[in-house]
Amino acid sequence: MPNLSAPAQSIAVIAHAHPDYSKGGSEIAAYNLFRALRAMGLNAIYITVTMSAARRVAWNEADHEYFLFVEPDEYDWFFHLGSPRTAVRIEQILKACDVKTVFVHHFMHLGINTLASLRRRNFSVYLTLHEFLSICHNHGQMVTNPLHTLCSEASTVACLNCFPEIDPSRLRMREWHFRTVLTELNGLISPSRFLKNRFVEWGISDDRIAVIENGLDPARLEKNREPETRRDAFLTEDTVTVGYFGQINPFKGVDLLVAAAERLEAKEGKGARVVLRVHGNIVSLSDEFQRRLETAQASGSHFQYVGPYANDKVVDLMRACDYVVMPSRWWENSTVVIQEAYASGRPVIVGDIGGMAEKVPNMKTGLQFTHNSLASFLSVLEKATDPALYKQLCHAIPTPPDSLAMAKAYLAWHGVRAGERAVDSGEQNAAAFGGR
Image (tube, rainbow, N blue to C red; front, side, top):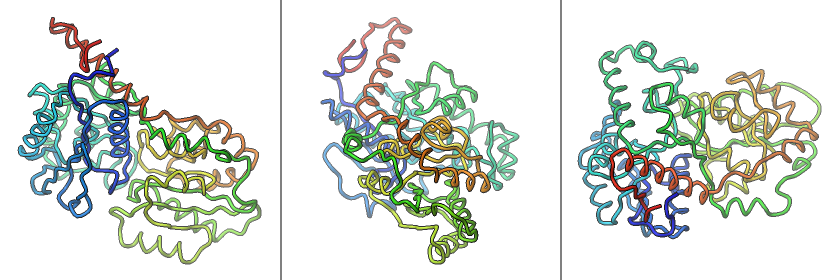
């Protein structure tokens, strides 16, 4: 076990965005890791590498935080190669801050080649996997293009079905390129066993990937200990509110919520009324769907779109709901939203696939519906109005791990990998951060 109290060098956490202006799970997890490392007394810095368009909102650099802006035309979105200048600038920051160990929470914007460059310069580099972008060119979602059906295994033939315009040799080169770099890194981290298994099936050695849960801010978990956070009854006797939290894009399944609201509006029934409340910012949606969303908002009593939200308010917003819902059309991994829902004392409704099914066992801490099935989702919504079932689910909700536990697990994994390399190379077995 590494000595966590006396690091030999500083630590860097690098991400493709900052949670102050982007609410994705990877940047939230990365920033929680950074703050936890600093809370432990370690010299941690946070580097955001993002597109220049974000400059207008990402202007306020705090202590120990750095922003690097890159231009879209300098980034290869197929092979995910960044500008050589990006690697140089990151290395300058790392050397100035005496950093030797780097935890990267996404290679997008900085480029997978930057990770390889840092590794060649003897930095210890660990990459946290958040989706399948290394494996899948279709936004890393492992869904087919253009039908959006689930894909279970990447291959040149399967990828050509999605992208027939791409030369097969480029697809093979992309696969070789990613697998080579990932193998050369010091280690990989996966927040779910499901995601790890996919990468093992793809060809990464099992012993190179550690499963470490995303951790939440301890202050957020402390808030869950306040009275009345786990209720035995709904907010009101006649309304059950199901809340969605996150980005609204074609893969997140918000259209399933709109369709369900339309069905509920057309159906006259007895019992509790279900309200589907959507929190989040709209990303890459068609004009047609945005009009449909606006129509559902204006014409019905079962759908509410309340817009973007500040992440530090998410616990209060979730507590204003009875359930949290994740209707994603792709596999998902270990979404922070599920952890936040548990921290808020709320059961979760999810599709029965991937990391969602792993984190929300059916009829235990939430309810599962058949992936992408409107009929199944409507059936589960009806089941969710049962007060006795709701009480049962609430009482089984676990306390999610905090970011301090996550940070200690990251450092322990680094110590394991450092020890293995020292033994393998015949060098002195000295773990980073002051030895073992």
